[in-house]
Length: 91
Image (cartoon, rainbow, N blue to C red):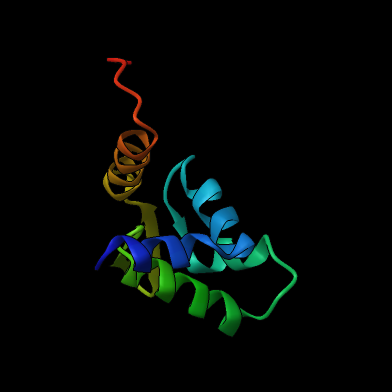
């Protein structure tokens, strides 16, 4: 997917909060759903959008689906933004 798809996925505050939660480690879909006051179906859709943008990965663990952050895509976005900004520092 392209950067446009990734940025669209990042545009939603619920999806950004899910990514923020996953930076602390893997979580099941149920654990993620518990943190929000919206339906499980809505969370499932948000997770699908994040997965389609390759921002999260999932794996099955018995009857649970476990999600984890795919930081490499975020790093690519950060490098693109740094290049766009014209930041030539080596930080």
